[in-house]
Length: 622
Image (cartoon, rainbow, N blue to C red):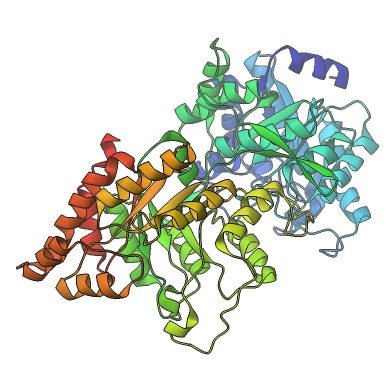
């Protein structure tokens, strides 16, 4: 098939590609420490069974079992001299299955990365890489594949070299060039999807796209970016069945079900993909579900990503929306239940993680990670937030104090947080060092919270730093600010809050509220004063521990006023901890009509008392 005919056919309707090969070979008993490509020679029957299953599931294109059949990868098994024989065997196995099916299925020659780094990152020259690709692709072409698919590439230079090798052998063979991306929407070498798309569009290829990567949701989002960056190029999408998870026994499982996967097929088509399939973790059941969806008329039920064009130092970049769970809760008006947690004082995070797991089970849907609360030395909040997200599965809201940081550190820390997938920030001034462990420590700062909010929302989220220089890719931080709903000077607090809102604050975390009537009056006064609704409020609720705790907070913590009747209840309570929980529940119930969420602040690390309040929320009804 020549390129003109191929492009005409994929314009008429999307072509369905097959799914994973390695996943199913392993499921059929192939050990992971052997070459899956060599199975074409010594056990072709199981390869044929997989091809046959995909054809019966409705695939229009199947790929040869030759993903790793290049001299470098085969050398790991002592098979580097059998490149031609293994690739020819791969084509012959697949071709026999197609011929026996009597269906008009196309055969693609699968070509993966070499498994070695090209110079200057590695020691393989461009000439050596091109020779290796040419050796493999030449064998596939000699046996009569209909097209070549270059897949799972993370190095743009390597991908360009593979295209050069293929075109040196044939000017007419259709070529599909696909890259793979990590969780941060970049390739392993840091290439963004718009850079990949723009670069591939300049090469002599017919289709560009994405395979492997994360699940369908990520690939759909990145596909929108590629389409914006290279609007004239046909697209391909073949995601994994979600991010792999290791379960008991060391097995790797992929969470996306065939039904879930199938629902994205039409979304891919509506986003411009003309070749749609699956990668790691997908099976013939996933492909069958996609076939059914592609053959069913009607719009996709999946919301298509929106893409904005961002100018960064004379460079225009396409960026797809990638909302955090917190951003989605805010947009959908879903109730937020978050708990403040302090990082550990030592190197072990086990107690923090166990407490986080308890809070998750009690109903918390986010966790606030404080940064050096009360100026006491603790583990980095970045590390604690990362561990909570990775091991517990709850998004973190990272407290980001400006005190003690100059502009260089502030901006470097922002980039670090984003790279660690910590995208929710609570910007505050921070506690003065004179009250903490190291009163002599530096206490200066270059920027106040309202200014930092502006820097994040109006510059970093637009792809530039404080000086206007490009940071390569816009961030997508969600930013919260601090507010007191019962301040000593309401007018001053309102003016400061309005400035934070104008600078881009997405939500506000309040100081602990003990006077719900005064808090409601503050909100009404703000909205009357400025003629606009206040931003989403997540109210601080702090269960009182005992009478002494109540008196201390009332008399010694600025901005906290606890009514006398409430302090009396705590002083006279038989079980003060339970009385504190009861008071917290009453405050929350009275405030709830004006709230977007609750921000639980435990006393003395008593997360069990916070969990009792969370139990009363019944968030499932929201």
